[in-house]
Image (cartoon, rainbow, N blue to C red; front, side, top):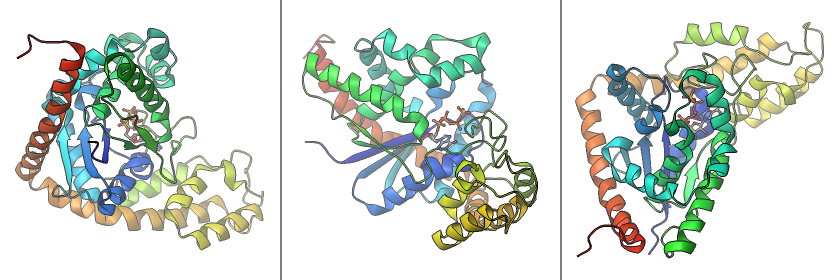
Length: 331
Ligand code: AQP
């Protein structure tokens, strides 16, 4: 029987930002509260080792990421929250799924091409097979819905192909997971050059203080053709407008659209409205971050409990997988 299940995760590769929040985390909270599915959310530390990192910092980053999940509003009573490497079945399944994945498929992954470019001195095999581990993350729970930003859609398409191929070869084990995009599936970085990313220094972090957020926003890229305050703007090419659409009430968004096109407001005015609205959302999250940060043992206990719940589900899938693949000595 397939239990309707949602799975998603984030890498502890840096401070979570409003791209992660608007693209994924906010809808995790909404979906968990809707109670239509069992919900599982993971801090994917095994993914984060695919680029250079400092081992002595990893555990504190994992903790910070989990704190962000809780501060965003995930409830550990309702959702399992855990750390990927605490449930070894993910990496075991990844190896088996790699045998159902073609090199050519992995070579086509745009995230691999981007990251290989960004980390030229360390293009390792784990970076290349990252999407196979991601497929395992989802399939080990037989999750059917995966709330992600649009940069992960290609990886999920691969997960569907791999699941289909596995099922054809070994028997119907896995449902094919579908992505679920938020209203803001791609937030560009403040530099306007690439998507907002933890490792690109182009973010507003969820933990940024109001003065930091405002200083970053003041310099943020908008419509490159709007050089003077009197030039009419083009909201459709402006990242601040995209973010307004995810945060600002629709009637205000419509007003901003009109006022930007007619140059009734300038980029500074538009940013000020965005600043007020984004701080309204971040303020309560930051307060909860401070509260959870003061109780790290409690957070670790939540992660241990989440891992225990997930291990049981994952092991049940893996015994089916080993059986149908003919692995192990058998009973
Ligand atoms: N800019 C974004 N806009 C919308 N959604 C985004 N996500 C990430 N950036 C944006 C979504 O957040 C979730 C977590 O992503 P991840 O940590 O697994 O890896 P990522 O996509 O590689 O995130 P970053 O921030 O860009 O990190 P680094 O710099 O380490 O690569 C995913 O659902 C993602 O779609």
